[in-house]
Length: 323
Image (cartoon, rainbow, N blue to C red):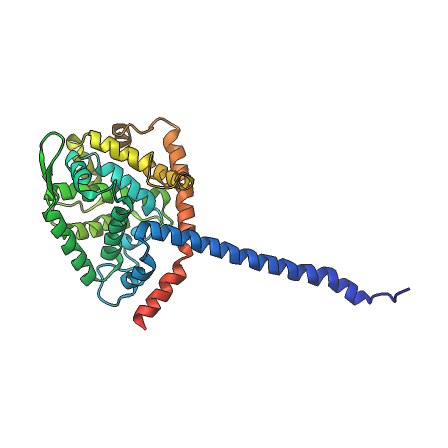
């Protein structure tokens, strides 16, 4: 008969071994979760900012030099937040209601032939003019103004348009500013005070003004008033219906990826003004807008979680550029 095991050892087995096993399993689970988080963030970054975003990002964020804005500014807080994904969808939908703006997009942007390239160029512009150096911002705006100077055409009714028209640029700015702010109000991590919301409008306008527009709103109240003042100029053109369908129903994504995108898009639709949803023939009866907002909230939280997995990349890039 084997000798009895000491009481102290018998007590140690059930308490120590399972405890160590639990720690090992928990550590492995954290590692797997971290890897999944980084993979989601990297996939989002590549899709929105391009395949070389991991290399270009540190240059935008980490290059030393004077900047137009700081991390404490409302524009930095809004445009760094994951709510920009839904805000971007809302901005595109709202902007396409202006027939001349839509004609320019349909005729010159290549949104069908190169949708992700167009998105990446837009994301690059926003990142550089918000987070980059003033020198980089000025160079980027100069390139955009040069492109705008060559974009000319006529809409479906034969009305002429040009991309550097100050009033058309003002419409694009107002629609974009309204959409970004509305999405941040609905889904943003840190809510802006009324004073900071007004500052956001001013700061956003300071960038657009450099593109050659004028008379931009200086407060949320003025932003809303200008948006309403544009309504007589808006209409749903065949090109707008086609673009909205492309954006919402048939996005250029593999079928397995579409449900996640649709949640983001639903969040964008939810923050549109009700009259804009009706013009675009989008669902506007209760409880559909509320359900769409819930989908947008879930999608934004998922995007935020994925982006958080890239924070170390950004910090490392910042150190590398400044070392």
